[in-house]
Length: 271
Image (tube, rainbow, N blue to C red; front, side):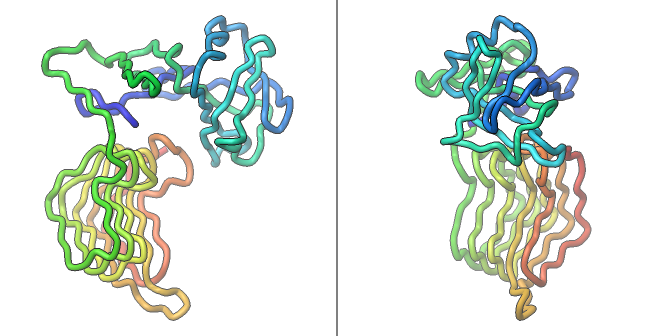
């Protein structure tokens, strides 16, 4: 789940912090095995990490074009992290000097705009970016999809404002003659804001997509072997401020198959 304060996405408590809207990083000192490495310094707070129930690391472990998140445990005496290979795996391999940060720690809730969720106790901790008032609004994403449908046909969604999901926003499998016209989609946590999987004769036009954790629109359809067309059109959409969580290989528009018409879209402000 993610947290929004007056419509602004907050940051899951992390170290090092985001400073002046720029991400800052720690770096691997020495790789000690294929799943462990040592870190810098004698920061006393790190000893408290050993009590953290769900510590994660986000890093560019080998290449600057490949990042991912992994669960880990800390050993403060040895100044080391060990990756939990049961629930996650390093992308490529650990490399000396690679950049990363640690996140999902109540102990690091120390900067305006951060939050932490204690899932066991069902408690939300928020350090608001500005002082709270009676009009302040905190929203926690709860639903997986805003719309999910299989084999949907002959349906139009016109000028609808969609917002805040944990997964893909509009998720359609094998849609036919489905239109999404106008409106906007924002604050989507999943792989893409709109997924048209195996689409036939569908339209996405004049939609504004913004502030999404991963990609914008993902469309597949048609048959490349026979050159059968999907007859699907993506046009005049505006996609911006995406890939806020997964930073690499996130496309504004991703497509596969045959016979899509993709025209007059604007894609801006990604990592």
